Length: 186
Image 1: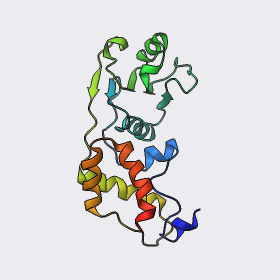
Image 2 (image 1 turned 90 degrees about the vertical axis):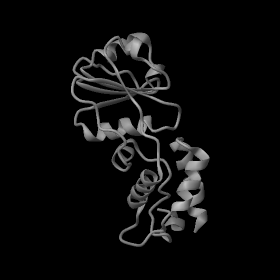
Image 3 (image 1 turned 30 degrees about the vertical axis):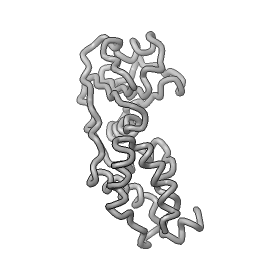
Image 4 (image 1 turned 180 degrees about the horizontal axis):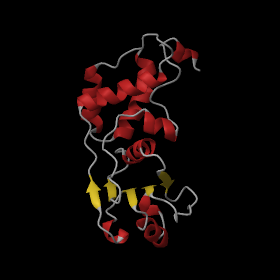
């Protein structure tokens, strides 16, 4: 616990890093998970919410397996029913072919992998952040960091407008800016 944030009614800076479980549970959902037997891909640039979306699905779907390509050890997928493959472009062709055999598959990547997956793929577009969504997302993060029932500072709506004007759809840049701005504002 940080005395600096305790004085604000918070346990920690709400815009710092969250654990994978916290990320899935304490962010505003952006898309519903794929239906059973479906293969979907999230294709977007860095910082647009792909990993967060996959973590939300992991939290929502019992038994879903999350693998971060190129970072996590490659698992045995023989009994896997629902695979969430983050950074899919970083795995080998053999691993991607193996992943494509999982009945329900969701991948995130920076480029279209539909041809490499060799099965019907639905490409999902993450919705762009707007003022209402960003306000709800920030409120959820602040509520998670809240210390008991103490009142906590609110982020003025005009700050959200400024962040969206400056960073557009780069959610990572917005979170980073809030991390630096939030404690200094008070």
